[in-house]
Length: 355
Ligand SMILES: [Zn+2]
Image (cartoon, rainbow, N blue to C red):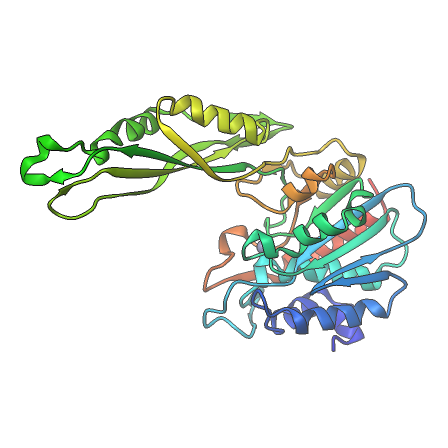
């Protein structure tokens, strides 16, 4: 179990959490250990599968969420952890056990925060969203999250504040034709050739860059896969171009879909997947205080993260964590030890002293 000394030191705690192997689906052990650590506090702790929610009940006027996932992507000859100077190496060091360690360290050691705090440690972030512990919590017990006025997700941002996130939409553009022997191609109708105008429109497309609350969101509309063809001597009767639209959070999913239908007007389109973006949400007082505590301007998050789940519940959320997001899921994943110390200091200062 995690000792008092380890819980008191966010670097040692990061290392200890990394050394509890918790590839998605295998979070029982780490959740048990986190639950045991939380049970020694005044927090009200509830467990859902391998997701833990721990709340202060101090009667403060505002409540904030600190959240981190417990799982990692599969190991890649990068476990257990090892240190090398200022670097802590190992699977999950950046994404995101260093951030999760900061939240757990504060949960156990900070008894008098200025705001009430809901700590969430959740399972299965790195796999299908249906298994995501935060999604399951948001669907089954939203009230545990919606009474907060701000959420901080400690995903890797390398010590910067990353605000909001882009939405994503996948659409299949399908062309059809008629099969024939390719020796008598005039008897058929080539569906692959008919996909050329889809690609031309994507090639000519000029994506927007939108600035919202000082954060720059760069959109992109791209073909990400193409399939078609029957055999080497057959004129193909179907071709499918899969298109991914990453859109700024000033568009809703519906508006993003309408935009893609506009760009690809005249083609047979099928929306197969979509997820909304999240506005930066920097107006909430706890968000403004947090930005003041960081003292550096926020930047846009150019991916999809669980901040969008909080935004969908009406809770503005930011990403802030010590890891470098560019090292996430890589074999040489590591985190700078001084970034963990700095991150823990910043979050504690914000939770205790205010602006
Ligand atoms: Zn992550």
